[in-house]
Amino acid sequence: MRPSNVLELLDVYSSYGEIDVLRGINLEIGRGEIIALLGRNGMGKSTTIKSICGMLNPHKGQINFNGINVAGMPSFKIARMGLGLVPEGRRIFSNLTVAENLTGSSRKGYWDLPRILELFPVFEDKLSQNSSTLSGGEQQMLSIGRALMTNPSLILLDEATEGLSPLVSAQIWDVLSAISNEGISILIVDKLSKALKNLSNLGYIIERGETMWSGNLSTISDVVVSKFLGV
Image 1 (cartoon, helix red, strand yellow):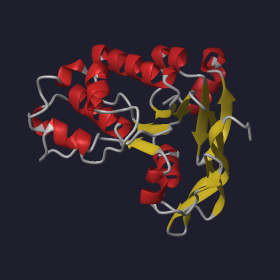
Image 2 (cartoon, one colour):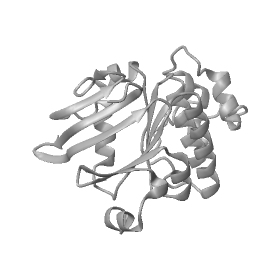
Image 3 (cartoon, one colour):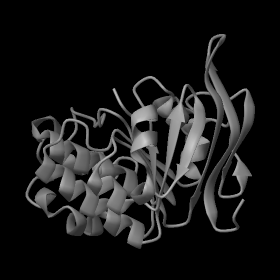
């Protein structure tokens, strides 16, 4: 493990009942790095996220977060240690206002409401607006802002740009780059794209619950893409 690592997964196995979904996941994320987690549907990407967050208890391996093995630890304790989640489907609190979504789980630190509004100026005039009325892109921005308000050292994004237009996706990538420049580490689950190649430091591909490839996405070969990411 590199001394600067924020997160390290070592040979992680996780199951639903008696069915192993993860069969040896290995990855690491350094401080301020943006890491992409790739794979076809059903290969274990979301299960990896759930295992890191404590929503699913691995039965083998280690998940070292800021030097502590959090495998099997309750989700709320892992969150208090500095883990932020932007879940698949955004899962904002649709019955609350934008401001309530942002401040409801906030913790004291660098990221406060004024800084979130600097990052997402679209919300300046929408703080009292019900969050259910936001567009899909705005809801994703709100979900990212909500995670930042917990002042995390690591953010996990599950399906970061799913269902978003290219223009909105580009805005999301710009925001993630800015967050990374502030020293926050980011693990992104998304589809392989030119933008993701340019944004990420490294990428990992999982297949049937195992880490099958890792490296710089700018050098990934067509053979690897076809074998592990093709339809």
